[in-house]
Image 1 (cartoon, one colour):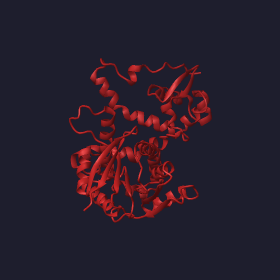
Image 2: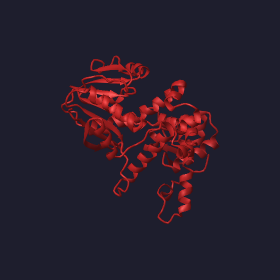
Image 3: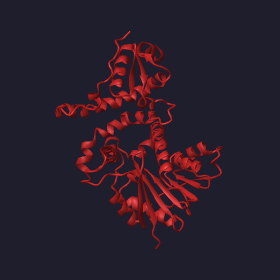
Image 4: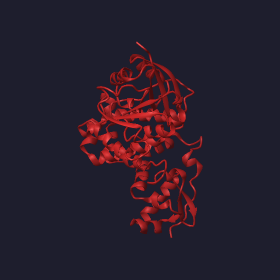
Length: 360
């Protein structure tokens, strides 16, 4: 049996104030190792099997056909970053964070781990210097095609990415349902709806609301498979199209959940104007997005700044879009005929940015 592990010292995850700056930087530089350790745990099914009961490396390796000594080294690393805990007697168990890697976890992040650690994704990030030098997307420089075109040309990869988006969509849906007041809303149009998880959550929580799922034909086809035969089938209309051309008319609320981050300002204003043109009088648009703190905002939470800044850099790498500040969203909304009426923060770190239609 392998030697028992010590519990990770607090200073490993929360370095003491006296930790040398060079050591802090070294830990940041090596953070890609954490990504790949997490991906391995998800890919090999380690977290799925550990969720049953505490197990040792030898037993787990036998069940999963892995090398026990190599597995022990991975398990020890997962303890050090808080995904596993030492249960004593050479046994390991999942922490609440590690449990999110299970396939059946309510707030699962398994697909997200596989996506972020994939070779095509990591390869694009390796070309970040090119993006900084030129302003071009690193992904297109690396792969010779735009990000979403690449996904369309590689269906298996596209499916994995779609599953990763579903992982996060659960958290987004919870945030929107909990944080936004749907009183007076009769018809919701979910633009770029993916598999319809957000609209489904809204309809379940608001029985008097009906909705429209709007996305590309292939996405709508997958969404239909999820909704057909459910109690929502009669309240959810599925429409395929191009949101830069036109949108379903007559909605009281048009939702753009993590859509505008993919596009530059001109394209974003064009999409918002399409919302303005399509919606009923007195309609609103709801932008669900990470909000970049204003520069010099000393009160901005560190976690919020980190999430928004890293996501913004990810858009530079992948799509050429960007994250924006409240002021920048106010400007975009104004150019499209809206007035920014309120911003509601959420536990999922995204903000719910509401724009009221200004009548011509």
